[in-house]
Amino acid sequence: MSVSINARRRVVIAPRRRLAARSWRHADRRVGIVLLAPAFAVFAVFVFYPLGKVVWLSMQGTDIFGQAAGFVGAKNFVTIFADPEFGGTMLRTGAFCVAVVVGRIVLGLFITIPLTVRLRGMPVFRALLTSPLVVSVSAASVAFAAMLSPGNGLVNSVITRFGGAAVPWLTSTQWAFGSVIVVTVWGSLGFTVLLLLGAFGAIDHDVVEAAHLDGAGPVRTLWSISLPLVTPTLFFIAVTGAVEALTAFGQIQILTGGGPAGATTTLVYTIYQAAFGAGSANFGIAAAVGVVLFVLVLALSLVQFGVLEKRVNY
Amino acid sequence: MAAPTLLAPALQMKRRRPATRSRLRDAFLYAWLVAAVIVVCFPLYYIFEGALTPTAWLDRGLEGLLPIHLTLDNVVRATQVIPLGQQFANSIVVTFSQTLLQVTIGISAAYALVFCGLRGTRALFLVLLSSMMVPAETTLIANYLTISSWHLIDTLPAVFLPFVASALSIFLFRQAFLSFPGELRDAALLDGAGHFRFIRSMLLPIARPTLISVTLVSATAAWNGFFWPLLVTNSPENRTVQVGIAQLSSAEAADVGVVLAGAAMVTLPVLVVVLVAQRFLAGGITAGALK
Image (cartoon, rainbow over all chains, first blue to last red; front, side, top):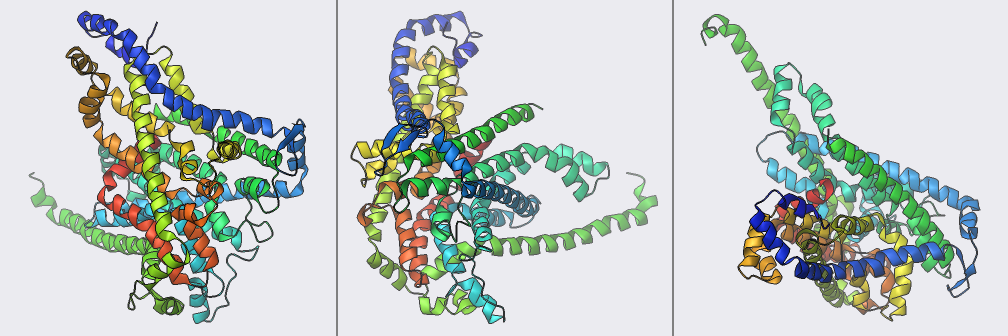
């Protein structure tokens, strides 16, 4: 039986309509297949086939021209995991994800909570504080690169003006990682605030009112009522933030190029370097890292679906 | 309310105190918000102010932040250093093609899923959705090989072809279509309207907020793309403007004004679109986020 989701809804409606529905069902199906075909074709060619191909490539050796050169089994995985640098990259990627997620949630809340108060001029503040949304990763990165540049950068010229010593924000192993984190968090702040505004706006006003009547102060209300009610959104922001951080590329490429001395090289940057970096065309290794990335993103998505499914129905 | 006469002094005290406290609280909130705006919006201000300010003035640090020497020189210089005009045109072509196809394919797929009574609709839908779990960075290498085997490297179709269908667009259209009353649709088809006619004159007008949000979200994503366009284009005149400004930044790092002019030119179109259609963008993003 063709019990599509809407067909199930239709069953309740009068028999006359069901009869009518039956009379064009055949034509409908043919049209449906034609209309679905383009989407499936695109996904087949550019998502599912390449996913299979990357898994296959990850088990292939690579010749000097980057062509697949015979089955090597798990050798590429063994190679990357045995490489101490890759361990560092994994740890760095993890630290990057955690820092970005925490930064984005904490700052997002600090910005959004005052925005939920009813005050004159609030729409202007809301618009201004979501505005970083319009800046692309590359525009943000080149602007921050200009601000943080060691020579004529704004930040250092202000520091030295007040008697401080210039900081090599992007060129020292000590600072570069933090700089990339700051840029990444800033880049996702507009989106975070937008999501949080939506979540806080959706809170039932009566619940908050009731808490007030029961004598709860604003802090208590926020902590015991509002925050628990926006937890699903916070969770969503955490997961998408983690995926975003896992797949960060533009800011790393533009700000530091993965350096200095690999200090800002994350998983995705490793893929780029292995496959397309200067003098390197090791698609087998790059594909193996790609598979690792896929497994991590898949795990995050599954956790998200699992948890959201539960939380949405509370 | 008989009590107030008796309790008046106490009540007044109680009433007045929250009033003053809330004025204080308001002042604190405004200060907080202004501080947040300064921190959050500063890079945006810096991009636009710097784009219109000579580098010599910008290099003075704090003073450079005062917009008192405005000029268009940086913009002119930026277009001379790299073919920014051509790259702008490339980005428009890519954004337009990608968005148009994503919307068209999204509407037709969602229509098929909702209205055509296909066998296994749910399974088909799940297969489409599952594509969202595959990060583009994983499939990048294989897609690069595909595009290269089609001899499309360094062409504009290479930039947008992998993204002409989007599971998110299909999902959002499906959600919008599901709320369409089945009776109306049956009536339309009985009255002789074809599928196309029905979609155009009944479904889309009703799903218009979704249509606008999906268009905005797709267009912004297409315009902002960086990694993939960087991989599949080589020659400056085939680059998109996002890749262009990154190259401008590494080549002209000393000329801050020129770099910021590039960043401003890339940002301006999105800024305008968002200002004009902010509520739709918010709707699109949050709908996608929170089902």
